[in-house]
Amino acid sequence: MSDTSIREAIERLSAAISADPSKARAKNASASARITEGLKCEVTGPRGERAVTDMPPAMGGDATGPNPGWLLRAAMASCTATVIAMRAAKLSIVLSTLEVKVESESDNRGLLGLDERVSAGLETLRTTVRVGGSAESQSLRELVAWADAHSPVGCTVRRAPACSLEIEVV
Image (cartoon, rainbow, N blue to C red; front, side):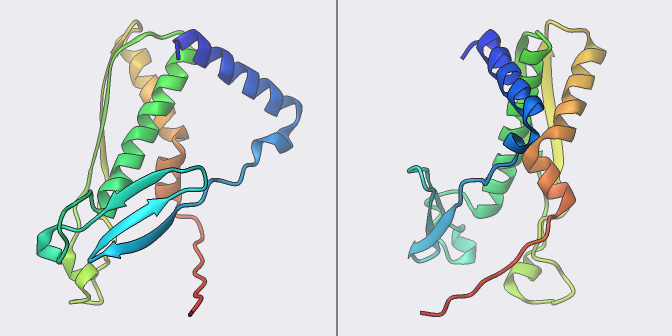
């Protein structure tokens, strides 16, 4: 899709939501995971979406796919890149370079249950954006900062929404 098509789509959607704010609410597509073999999971969505995860051999997996933490980082990176591209199209900034990298560390003692004081969660997430385009350096920095503040995945990770757990024993 061209920058013009992206800009026009964003403008149409923005106008529709501005006219009727109730159109802004959406129920997001679910993701369901099931173990297929060992630690390999097949993740599916309601419209045929599919991903496979696995753990590395050191954790007992076969490394036949990325681990779930990598998918989280990938979601953050791709969501941020998408929002940057959308905002650039809206502002008529032509991007010549756009690369987003998300890195983190973790402490495997939490995942393995070796120390209950250690979280299994990822620690500090670092996002690095390489960007170039038809705007001045300051405008590109502002574009990236705006996109980072409006990236749904990034905002979700930073805000940590309420989570619930339902268990169905079969």
